[in-house]
Length: 472
Image 1 (cartoon, one colour):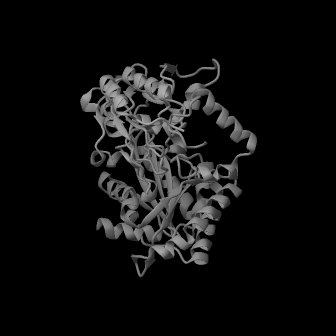
Image 2 (cartoon, one colour):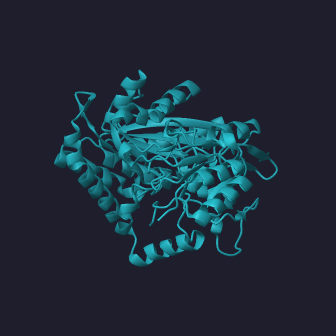
Image 3 (cartoon, one colour):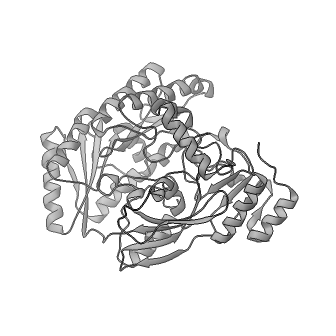
């Protein structure tokens, strides 16, 4: 179906991007064979890796690939969890790592213009120097600008500020046929034609390669505070969330956490979470324009939590306490990572999180597995972890491969089916990529899937750009 990368094509690639920006040695391509999806069985080596340094070079690579029908897999920071940048058809991995400049921080328009290969970490540093704030925080700061735009990444702060799509004002894109196009710009609103900007945001590198993005910014909050409230049950914790919002309080983030992964993370970090009470905790982050306002908000949040059954409310009222809490939360995945098979990010209506997590607990008993869950209570995004270990006597203990494989696929299927049954979606922020596309027929009818395939065909008539991802 796809053309091979011949010696002659490698010579042409070296002319386009430079001798030192082409990798053909297998031992040097191992990092380009995978993303952060835990199961190695989806890994695949490309035939060649190219690292263009500008948009024109990206365009020339795509023209060459389209001419010979060679599969091209775009790659950013490879922090994805759905196999989105795995070159399953071999061919060319096109890495944007050399296109990593923060081009401009525009204070007058409250925007930043960045090349796609710039890391979030570097972008945050540059905008902070100018006293500005980019609210979305998808997690791993080694993720790239192009990657988070391509997956429409979210993160914990989506409750108040929205996901990446809410902040993208313009993008430069190289189409699969090599044309360079621009969608949007330094504008805040438009009702002019179809929004190809929004179509491209979240397209996971299947419709075009994002090479540059213009992103809106905000002034930073004057004050932030973190609260932790333990509850006897997940139901008690989740029913508290709408009560907080109904009381005209819109937190920056509301995270729900189960006690077991909290305890594992405490051991991993050698630090203590503020409370060991209850089975489910809410971590609530609020921001405000002054210290007086933040204290009033904190008191109001504490009152609502207490009225809804919180066993206690811990208020981190200084930077050190807040940092300790956020460090523990941010290292939760790392604490269990060595035992993780897959991190799901099913998103359900927020009021149905407790129902979904109760179903997770039923599956744990049914299949005798451990499925630790936590996530974003305000927007319904649940991160359930499929594990190759069990939580026994306060520790994670490994189980034989034959044992976890016996139930892995069935548990995975039932979780996705139930999430869709509750009115949810397969992915809230990680994307569909390679590993979730088999479940798309669960939530989309044939007409919708046909439209998606037709859109792909219009943008990529030879089906060379990130083929096999989202839809075939």
